[in-house]
Image (cartoon, rainbow, N blue to C red; front, side, top):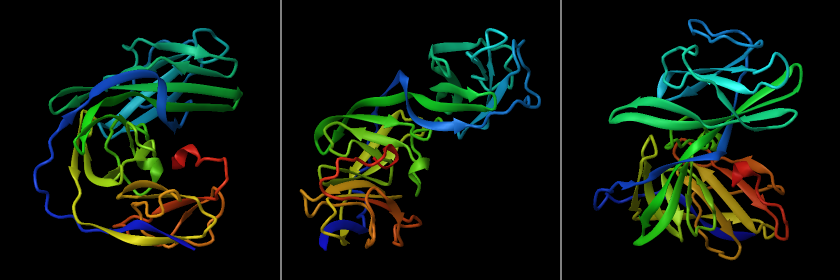
Length: 312
């Protein structure tokens, strides 16, 4: 059995100085990030005014913490038959679709249609908040229709991390309109990427590890800024893994880490002792990480496979 260092508990000293806000720029991309499926129905939503439609429509309700009522959308066709190729979206939260201009497709094929980014506006404390949502409609049979949503906007910029400026991107991975979600489950978390970091995309937690150093991280709800503070007095524990394991991925509310055998004492951010963990198989194990239960993924040496996207 090999023994790698891992973060078993956190005893953080009082913050020496207040974290400063490091502001980021908002970008729009036609390549969606993250994904979330929306439930489709043919039943019209109550009290929503609809436009004149060409075909029997599909409806979906997108939920977001930025608007307790959520936002309704309606899928329609430009022709009486064929693929659904336009969408009406309640972009301003007025409860009306009849006064909205339809959004067309950016590309399509026989079975699917991808729409141009939908610009959604929310009321914020300091003014309007803009967000972009990408929708993809898929239909492989008369009764097999699906709608996938992705984030069409992200925040990026240069951030001072340990005295070095690095390009950082914030991604709304769970596609709910906010950028600061962290939870015990990866599917409920947002993500952050750091230039030059071997892990690539970190799921957001209380801490961020860059070049072996831990930082307390705070992200604005709308993604406009990030705060980082070097973590002091971090307590490390030990994780024992079989000799056949070459890579170790740990995740919990405290953060997301990756360790390889090249660094026998790589620091991870979840505490547990693992056994009977199979190739590319995620297990949940008993351990103390606040209220979370860490998820770990073991990969044998020589395997060309990488963790599935959900676990990267």
